[in-house]
Amino acid sequence: MAEKPRYTITTAISYPNGVPHIGHAYEAIATDAIARFMRLDGYDVFFLTGTDEHGQKIQQTAAREGITARELVDRNTPRFRAMVERMNCSNDDFIRTTEDRHHRSSQAIWERMEKNGDIYLDKYAGWYSVRDEAYYAEDETHLNEHKVRLATKTGTPVEWVEEESYFFRLSAYQKKLLDLYASVPDFVLPKERLNEVASFVNGGLKDLSLSRTTFDWGIQVPGNPKHIMYVWVDALTNYITAVGFPDTDSEQFKRYWPADLHVIGKDIVRFHAVYWPAFLMSAGVAVPRRIFSHGFLFNRGEKMSKSVGNVIDPFDLADAYGVDPLRYFFMREVPFGQDGNYSHEAIINRINADLANDLGNLAQRSLTMIGKQLGGVLPKPGAFSDNDKTILAAADAMIGMAREHMKTQQLHQVLNAVWAVVADANRYFAGEAPWALAKTDPARQGTVLYVTAEVIRQVAILCQPFMPMAAVRLLDLLGITQDDDRNFAALGGARRLVPGTTLPAPAPVFPRYVEPDAAAKP
RNA sequence: GGCGGGGUAGCUCAGUUGGUUAGAGCAGCGGAAUCAUAAUCCGGAGGUCGGGGGUUCAAAUCCCUCCCCCGCUACCA
Image (cartoon, rainbow, N blue to C red):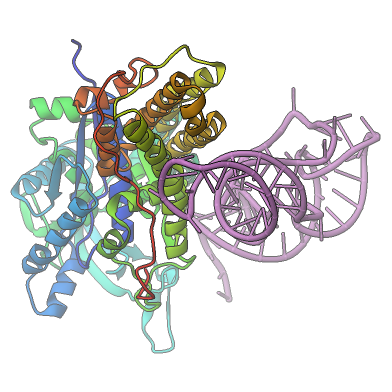
């Protein structure tokens, strides 16, 4: 048997100077759905997530709370880890940038870049915004009414900083980056994002300040411990740390690098699509194959913010709706790559319409009929009618469409394609009216029920990446219990339900959402 | 300011080599059915396709112009 192809996928690492919010959960869920999809489709997947624990903001937050930076991240990071688990993510590793392996790795990539002649020591003076982690030119700032100098673009306070700093020769990578974008047209998706990046690079690149001396919560520059690495060197390097860097000869590194996909938020595209490949090129390490930038989620059209008071805790959402329905909602409702909206109404609408009514009820009504009228034994179908063949063909075609959409991470389209078949199946079921056939043509009834169950089987298999728990329960109800029968190789008509199988007693898999009471709704 | 994307049914959106009565899902309305999680199925309804002008036998689709929203980016006093 040929070795499985590998697939390496990552989320951005979260900055744990606070608690996880819905955006973190969304990214983790989407990435997990892709990871699970690829696993089911026969790939050896390495799925990485984690936390980015260094930097001045962490240090300042800790100081404000009267604890050390170390204490702060040790307190907050477990919450992020728990969130990933609560969302039922199947990550293979959870990296923390404070780990020894990462310090070694970051220092190693630094040394490689330095060896390549891309790092030099110079002096930096300018207005620095801690919150933005960025320097601004004088004319990019202004004084507000309180005589406080702010960055004009972001409105964040800036301070005059004059320090010795290492610089990275980013300017030397303009052409190489443009060549990369030209030769790998899907390097950044959605496409618009790549265009933005390319136009930015096209406009010229300045060398990048790569170290700081004004605080110490970070990774020391090799040979000059006064300097702490620029947080983005540290943060981005996590992706290779986790696959064994700097041990580039290790089996793990050779197998899992370069990454196939970095899933990130649209706010950090530049770091991933410009700085990261430049660092890697400098260090002589292969660049990732794709960056996918997802959008932001808005609560009733409003950006989440503490002052508006609409910050949503992902744990609360999971408690309120269940993890699987929540995952389904975000993956189905929001075109992946675009911004999305969510609200209590929208969530229950999806849960009830798509899950409870369309799929759940179809499964329940057909399986109940098999249970009650056929003694729980999957019937042996007769010759297939044209209607049977049509719906089976639609079910068989799902995996092809799903793969096609997955090539560009169009997760919502995968679900769209599946639910189109669910709708077809409901029409089929109503049209064939097996409850009436019970009296007039039991053999034909058996065929209709068999066909329906077969369609549900394929739907359930394809639902696994999105709703791992519920999909498996549905497969259990269909007597599909072997892992081998649950992966995508069992789709497309390659395998069918085995007539004569005794099924367990059916039970609703997707309950209708009913309002508990007028209590606080997310 | 520049570049790019977008403004289509109550909501979310599809729809450009220009061509018969502009589509889908959800919501809403009417009907059917009663196997099922009061679920399902069928049907009507619902739109000046951002405004204006132009090209054309014919424009949501092409051109001009204006308005509004979003993203990236540059900059001025």
